[in-house]
Amino acid sequence: MKSTIIKLDNVWKTYKMGDIEVHALQGLSLEVKAGEFLAIQGASGSGKSTAMNMIGCLDIPTKGRVYLESQDISRLSESNLAQIRGKKIGFIFQQFNLVNTLSAMENILLPMIFQNISREERENKAKELLNIVELGDRMDHKPTELSGGQQQRVAIARSLSNDPDVILADEPTGNLDSKTGENVMHFLQKMHKEKKTTIVMVTHDAHLAKFAQRIVQLKDGKLIRGRK
Image (cartoon, helix red, strand yellow):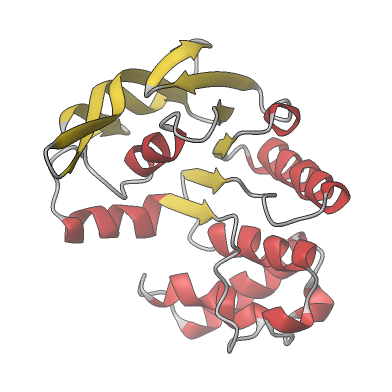
């Protein structure tokens, strides 16, 4: 039986807007198994991005507990959360979030610089990842010289640079046309099968969610469908 890598236990997230309290998450409990591809689906305002922030150590809950590999991260300081993010979690964003002044290779090198990895090892790893995402011949190209699909593949390679335990993909095809988006999803699916990396993807798109092994649906900050 696969072990649980992430667990949200009765998680609430409340934001104060003046005198009004907005409950983005309302008692959400969810387990992510090591090596699975999970899609969190829901409409805008359903709480899926807030759930992603909890899973990705980008925020802490108002109430409840968040566990990463059995470690309670619910009350850690920002510096400790940042350290965990750097070592254990890779992010793929809708906006790609590449540095336009850096080449594809330099963008992939960037996360490794903060992990005390030698220059030679960093460069070898970046070249290996560029070949994996089939962009070995584009390593010196800047993002503005790449297509949207190529930029997202650089972002996928960057997310893998520190061998994270979990990849979080936030609407990874949101800025791509449907055909390119489908290609990126097939690529993510292939990476998941070959590297056995845990992937958690947030999407509003039911078609994209079908690429995952398991789908859970959120509404009003609560789980409405799918196993916990």
